Length: 78
Image 1 (cartoon, rainbow, N blue to C red):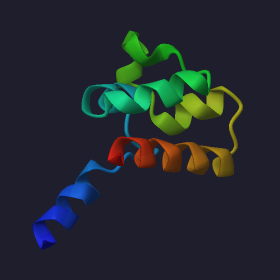
Image 2 (image 1 turned 120 degrees about the vertical axis):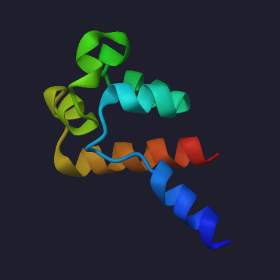
Image 3 (image 1 turned 180 degrees about the vertical axis):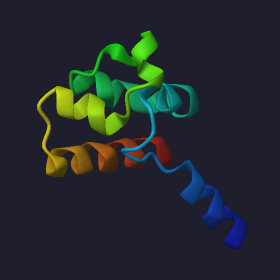
Image 4 (image 1 turned 90 degrees about the vertical axis):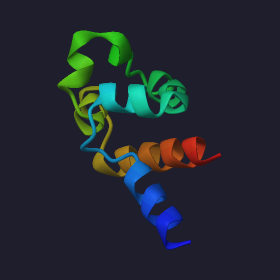
């Protein structure tokens, strides 16, 4: 049971992950980013821009970013 908890912790989407990392590792989370206006999922910048940066560029506050991350993590957990 301890290994499962560690695995889940490693898979958590964080604001420091690049958009490209999320696209590769958690494709189900992409629809949430697209709904939030982050459409650079498939472009070259996706591997340089973090989730936080992408959402901030689209006008999201820190509080809103935390809510989006929570939704993304809940979505990929299901």
